[in-house]
Image 1 (spheres, helix red, strand yellow):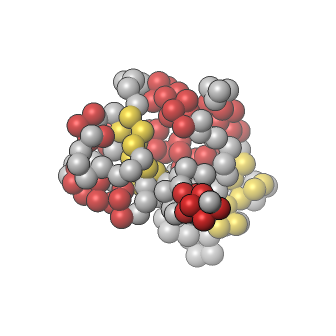
Image 2 (tube, helix red, strand yellow):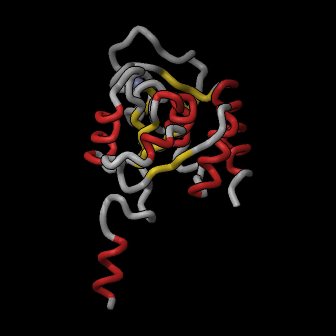
Image 3 (cartoon, protein in one colour):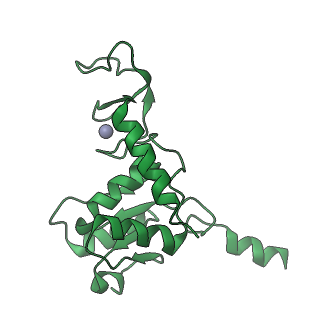
Length: 169
Ligand SMILES: [Zn+2]
């Protein structure tokens, strides 16, 4: 008995594991917020063919986030699909939160909003851009060199994450 239960909870697509996402091109804004919250989220470039999006989802064990019913029901769709319905970013985020009880405080500001890479501490070692000298909680993206630090922008975004979490059940 224990064996069969263990089998059910194993595997990268287990609902108990932290999900990874891929958002279609209509949901890039929601996808960027997933990155801000710390979720590994692929955002295919505009014009990427449906087939490639679905293959990437399956190959990389990503949950598909989409507003496109045809894509959601495609025979190549991954096991987990989150179909949101609204036209606004606000309603997309609310759907996402409620459909899977998403925690927006998984690991805020641990991942690059632009390119999805996990952030490193401090300023980038060899880039022109760096944080103001009095900035705190400085981090950088080792891939695209974007620099982040605790400022009013980050504080505002943290407030938004808290607001999204209020939508949870
Ligand atoms: Zn980056």
